[in-house]
Length: 346
Image (cartoon, rainbow, N blue to C red):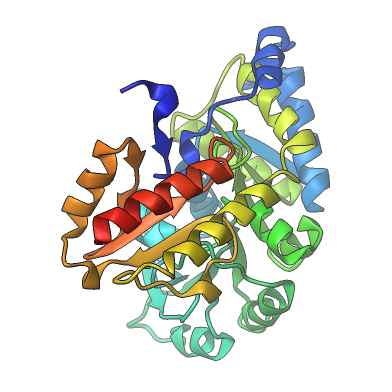
């Protein structure tokens, strides 16, 4: 089947760079970034720090590397990190929090991805010779496994107060933080204001081919830069990665609204199909999770039938399917997908 005919709803990581990004890569001014001499990287980092209202920024290769570096820069080995139970760091990052960072994860269950501050307070281990020292609270905004749900500035502030009271750092996995900003119609600075540091991805809805950015204080980023080198992430002429990132931050954020509209349309139409179960209140950005338990077909067979019709999706636990909208998906693609799913259910 021709690639152009495929409707790829597996993830927004499948986005391809725009022509403008390709031109930016081609014409990027380059230098050695390990020596902090790549002007394009330096420009991207300055833009990112300013946009988030933080002092400094650091370009890294991926969201997983960004999270691992940030965990290590915020803590010491053997300490406790409090995470939401369905968080990406806990589920999808190969256990690096323990195997590499040497940290003990303590999970908190939430309904939609935003932990209750009271539950976080309970999870903070008291001072005792038997227990690891708590040092960090992590948030995820938007929240992947909860279906792209957002955490508001008010919720972040409440958790920040708990962190400060207990002398803990507060970190945000903001892989899709611009989706949260668009969904809430608030400046991204307001989402970053009450966390000590955070990261965001360039390579998802913003359509860059690779890269994530960590932002925080000068002291934190200096430490993170050293840890990036330890983890093999020191890059030389990294301006070819930074150049499309600049285009993304200057021109690609507002268009995320289109992805949200397509996701809402997909969710609404899915809710009309007999046998499909979906919580429309959870479809807040560009991720759509739904259950097919009542379709009388296994999730694997469902995914296979979609693929036969040139539609790609992913399973999320038993009988749960995930679809993600992005720049490569149009409304007509959604309508075609709905029509095919409707036929599968018949």
